[in-house]
Image 1 (cartoon, rainbow, N blue to C red):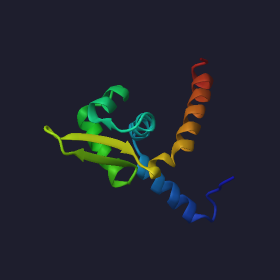
Image 2: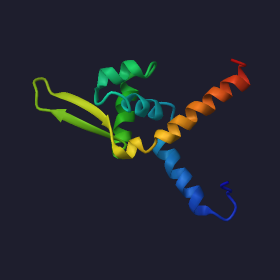
Image 3: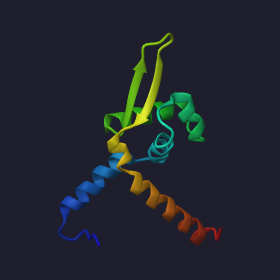
Image 4: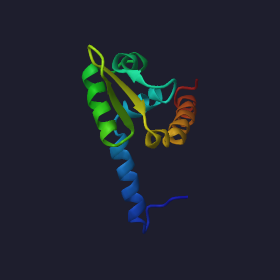
Length: 113
C-alpha cells in the first residue's frame, strides 16, 4: 500500500499523472479512442456525450502534448484529420478499467443502483 509519509517521489508521480489527466474529459476521450482505430473529430465528439467542440479541441491538444494521442493530417481535399491513441495512452487501460469498477461500486454505494 502506498503511503505519503517519507515518499515525495510518489507524491510527485501522482501529481504528474493528475496534471496529464486532469478534468472530466481526458479519460473519456482516451476511452473513446481505445476501440476501433483512429477517429475523426466529429466521431469523437459524438461518442463523448456533452463535450463542446471547443473543449474537445483543447483537450485533444493537451493529450497530444502529453503523447497520449496522435493527430494525423491526411493529404486529401479538404484535409482529413484523424486522432488515435498512442501506446503511451494505451498504458492507461488498467487505470480506466479500475475507474470503471470503482465508479460502479460508488454509484451502488451512493445511489443504491
